[in-house]
Length: 298
Image (cartoon, rainbow, N blue to C red; front, side, top):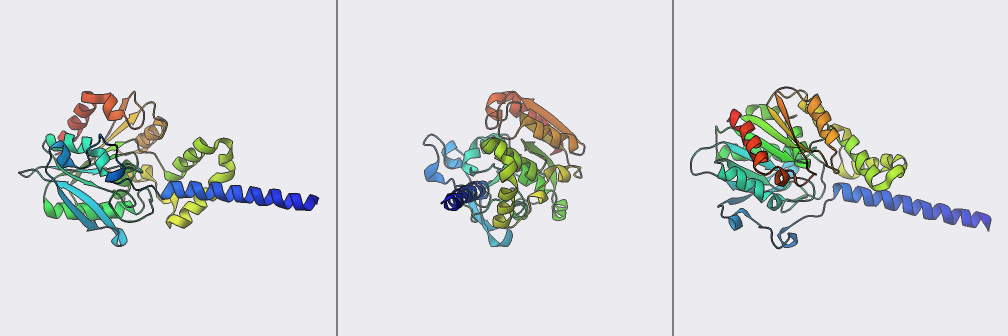
């Protein structure tokens, strides 16, 4: 009878362990697809709802994954801003940014990353495969608007995708003039362990390794290969780092570390804000600083 209960306890613990590992892996690399029907009612679903004309397109990303785009050209030739959104949202959630850049005279390209919004794919790899999708976007937009300077703008995961894009040698033939990186972190393994610790506390020491292992197996990529700080240390294009001092999703210290490791030229702006409200808290100051930075290079 004693052995029976021991086996029962072991079975229960094993099931719970597998459940935690499996659920955590699922949440980490299989984001819920946020489509129009799931957007808050007061949010615009496309640029036309805020008075902007735009074109829709779907291009073939890495290994044929369909990538959904919005393209907002200006009537005359103008610099291009490529916008890269964060985890588990879509391009409709960054219409505020689209509007700001377009109304300042920039042409704007926004996409849904793979496994997000209206794009294909089910697995998010935080820049590992997304950088190749972004390369396809670069090729597409430079055919639409050749010989125009390009600015990369990414927030949260979007800043990681843009950083990883710059690791590809092919990007050197495109006229990328500067990058705005809001709330990046130095490397994905460190960020992953932080997320696990936030949710599981001291159990992070037990669950981190298997969660990372399952993530790598299911996502077919190595977390350690997503290392924005290593990339940015070798990239000489101008970089503007933006962070929220009270960010509890990607700690301010992570972004500061990434900034410290990045090559010159670079700038850092800090707002007394959290993760998702930096542009709202910063208001006019935020946008003035962003445009003051990028206008130097276009």
